[in-house]
Structures are given as C-alpha cells and as structure tokens.
Amino acid sequence: MARILCVDDESHAAKLKCIILETAGHQATPATSVSEAIALIEANRYDVVVTDWRLRDASGRDIVVAVRKTSDTPVVVISGY
Image 1 (cartoon, helix red, strand yellow):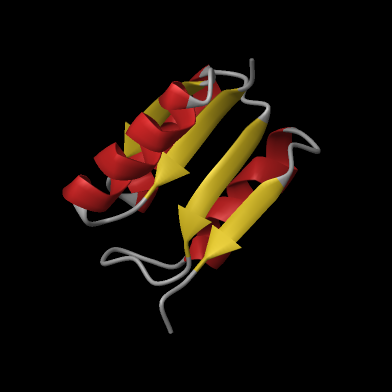
Image 2: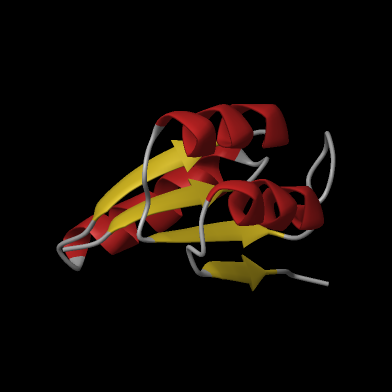
C-alpha cells in the first residue's frame, strides 16, 4: 500500500483518481489547489505525488518544487494538454 497525494484543480477528477487508487489498495488524499497540496506535503509523508500540470492557482511545476524541497518523493505529472 502506498500513500499517494492526488492534485487536480477539478475536484471530481481528484476524487476519481483517489477512488481508482484506493480500489487498487492504496491510501489516496485529494488536493484541489497548489496551496492545499503544499500544506499537505509539508505536514505529511507521501510515497508518490500525482499532479495535474495546469492548475488554476499555479502549475504542477510548483508542486514538483515543493516536493523537492523536503524529499525525493516521486512525482507523476498528468496533463490533458
């Protein structure tokens, strides 16, 4: 079981990703903004972070930078563009 943070500014997409990952036996936490994701990254340890690249309040790059400041946790970037 992996602890996974799912970041997507569309709440239904974040929830769907979490449901899929939880069905596969993982513990998934949704975040719908960069600021929420960064707060979660600073307060918790995740085995992997899955993020959209284009987010309303910033970009997936900001997520990658935040993760790299505290750990070497893998980041998977997903984009529809």
